[in-house]
Length: 473
Image 1: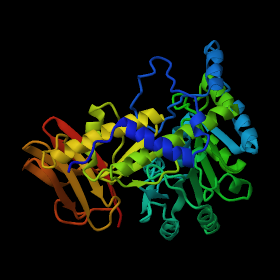
Image 2: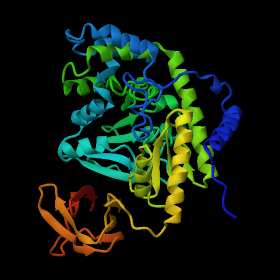
Image 3: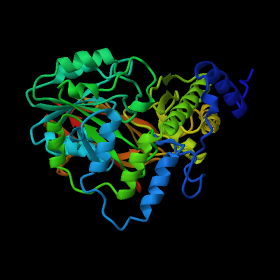
Image 4: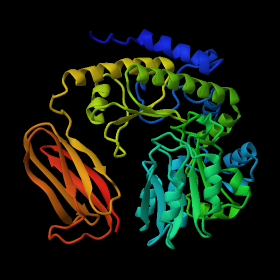
């Protein structure tokens, strides 16, 4: 007997039932997606964890008001926004540093505290920018795998500390796994940090968290802990295009971050939008409520499709599609939905929450793609690429998985960061399908390669791809 097809109406009925039980009052949300040009421009873009409702009305009005003054320079040092944030969080203005999105702030934290020979410790999978900035500054990134429950392994991070450790970089809630660090575990962890090490905590998704087991690290600042908290206006405040982020810490650490920062990187309209957005509590409430309904819609849909997912405390969710994620993502893209894959999780896709209607349409598209792949389970992959490198970083050996859609010569070569060829894994035609290779951390002469970052380069016909691999001895 064939399984009945799940329709958009089925998803909506189930989601509505669950939201009525779990989210009383959420149905009163009346906000709708907003786009300055065409509201359909970004429909289906579920890959950047953006706010589908857009900026708050107060922020939009502030943007429009400031547009007439775009010929005038902004507050050079972002003092106006820093004072507004300080008032909002009950801090002093000298404990706040504002920059062009969390992107600039993360870079400047690394610039302030990481140099040649220094070490940064972070989790994996997690948001990797801080690690990349440390490597760019001549430092080393040490990755500690998350535990079997997809939670950052704080004890593993403590065990990885050496005399060269300068920063521990945490993302809480984590991206892409969307899990939180329990507040009691965080308190115990901070009490064990040796002197001279800074703990950077990226709280980009702080406002979305609902569980009482979570607590922001902002209160630790006034308690004297060496904590730098990073936040952004890009997510819940809907100002991803305005580029405003900020760091919170002691006045001493903030001064060191500001010392490596450029002047006037945030525009005058962005300043105004951020300040206005802080005051719009109604928009914040509507955004969080819409996100909760959308997550329930996804969770119900995944359950009906028999898919396992990682419970999320953010505005995105990871789901195991029970097959190679790359072709599923390609199939979804063909139907108008963009999602993310990677992080050495070859069967998972990450979906940003849109509106509840958008989530229902996405689930129908996902079912369509999975049914197609189920009927054609033996079909040849249509997209070439590097599927995964695991483990990465590695010590002894790592497995490299690639996809080959057509019989063609495939070059798979490892280079060091200076562009010198280290080892050739393959340089011959391969049959269509998925192929695995093992690198044991040796060079072409069979000698152990030095610790460091290497570049894996794949060339097949006109297609090329690369992936960084870190060898730790």
